[in-house]
Length: 154
Image 1 (cartoon, rainbow, N blue to C red):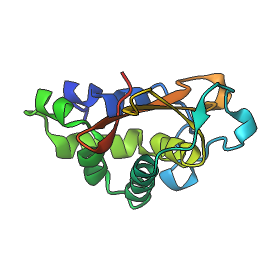
Image 2: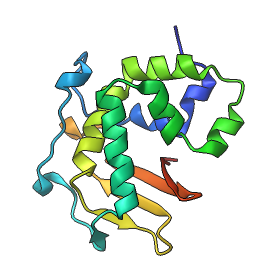
Image 3: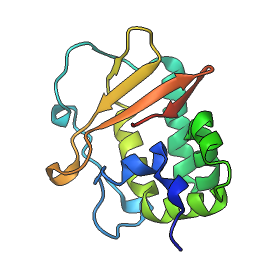
Image 4: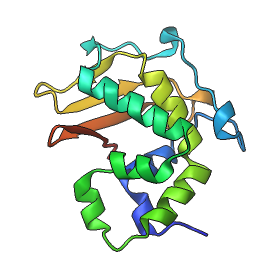
């Protein structure tokens, strides 16, 4: 079963370029490089705001517990859900769980310990990490909307 076009939403689309897992690795065995020395050096990095750190921890917990629908409900921005209101979110979450959850779990575990670059207004947070094999995306972006943080990589 292939996910509909709605699966191209931010949360799912960015993971396609993340490349932080070995091919066919199960979620439990997904690992990412965690050494701070591997993170790109950037000016202006700070500790994550408390509410963002809590959101990342929540994401790790949901993915560890394989609660993919709850994860998608929590981390896909409400405006993006509106744009794809006819999508089958159960199907999207199931496909995400099979294909991308391990990658995202590894990334969230890495960035949970990392410094972040915040926008001046504090509504955008960008974490840098080193993808395995030098491929894929090297950032994950969160956006704050109505006092909640969402994955916002576009």
